[in-house]
Amino acid sequence: MKSRPYYWIVSIWILTLLAAMTQIWAASHTGYSGMVTINRRVKPGVTSLEPSAGSTKGGTTVTVKGDKFYAGLTTVKLAGLVVSPVSVKSETELSFKTPAGSAGLVDLEVFNPGGVSIKLSQAFKYEAPIVKTVEVKAAADTLVANGVTSTQITVRLLDQNGELVTDETVNLLADRGTIPAQAINNKDGTYTATYKSSQTFGQANITAVTTTGGKLGKVELTLTQRQVSAEKSTVSLDRNWAMIGQQGAVLTVKVVDKQGLVMKGQTVTAKVEPADQVTVSTAKTTDKQGETQLRIQSVTAGERKVTVQVGEVVLTSTASV
Image 1: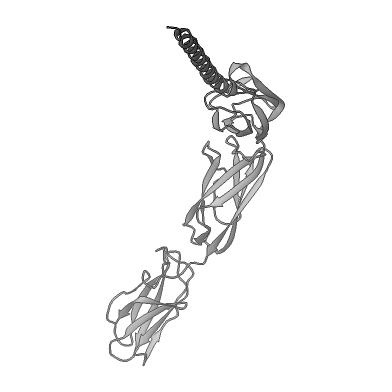
Image 2: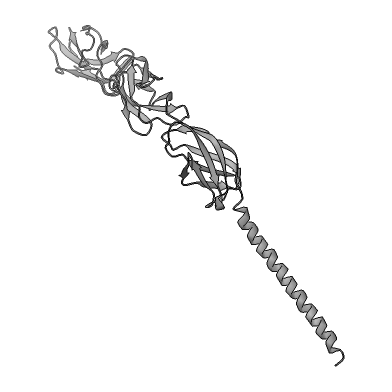
């Protein structure tokens, strides 16, 4: 009974200590929770933005680097307008696409919850698009000079910020072959037209010129000489027999190229075997249908085989009379 006051005092002391420890634990965890909230409400920092200029049409992707950016919490204003969406890649980097705006310098402001923000005055410059670069490309840069083969020409216009210009008029000129006077505007920054080769081989230069500012772009094509097709060209006789010493047989030759198109102005020669006592007339160059004729005569009877050559090309097709 005399020791009970001592135990009582010890018990009270232990309970008091436990209560104090509980308060310390609660305070430390409350503080930790508060730190998370405070970290997300601190003033953000901005060290750079790239690019610092873009088109008045908007759509420029701007990357902002700094500190204390939070996904879903950090917001951006450009020229006083809220930008959405904002992509926060990390605590030190975010990006957004600019809305359309008027030409001139505008302010950039980055916000964290609680209204804390950082403002960069005249940080971004809206610029009216001016064509600086004209890119001209051909789907195929080598064509056969037959007046038929074609390729698509594509023109891209880039402004001073390297962005596509979508509202220009592009005029076209070819020094060999044909192309429409104006390219089709595809409304996506590309302008297209179909070029058709000439019938003379060599280099063909295609020039694109913008109506506004007269900016130029060029592409060079190679037009290769047409080649006689040994397989597609034909040889035929008006008849497979002829009277000795009379008018003889008429040989018709049609010359086409490897694309199957007729070839005008080609020189044709014929070889007859056996050649004894046989004469072959000299043929005119092929006409606009690609045709010419030769006359074969003989003073002796017998079968003759005729082989035709166009330049250095020996035709596959032959004839017998």
